[in-house]
Image (cartoon, rainbow, N blue to C red):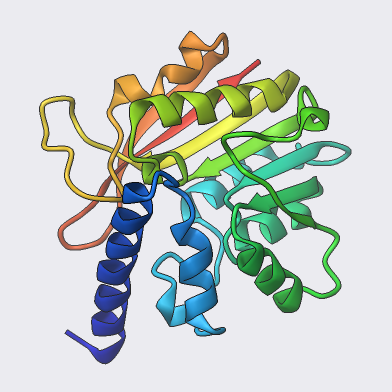
Length: 227
């Protein structure tokens, strides 16, 4: 294991401890702020901070061929902002939020001249003024960080409410079969759990199962829903 891989493994182990501690206090998302603050500007302390846009998002965007012009996009749990900046570069007017104020401040330091509106918000209680506003919502790996089905349904409902008529929701997550062990945080989602958006009234366009090139490879779902 290289020094970088060892550091990432230590960071993943620490975030799991932080998440478990937050869950015990009854606040399942407070650990995000603790993690970002304690990183003190070191991106290697943030396991998902690859400083590049999500490849599954970029592949999907490439197929849209300029669909962002004149449209509004919302990035869920934006982290350090790479997905938001990619969407802005594709022509979308982007709002990107995170529950962590430190993550948002970090985005603003990284991209001081960005056109993206970075803001602090709680996925479980999004602003009323966002309802019906966005033509594209990108949710990558945030739902799978919520420990309980009821919280995921609540979050999914909030996102569905924010989608404009004809708008698209893109969901990217780790995948598992219903009979598989649930594992540890971040918890992979089953196909049925991803399909909560259909039950909330959205139309499923595609639900792909993909594998990355890691060893061992990781299963993921990429789902596209439309209002």
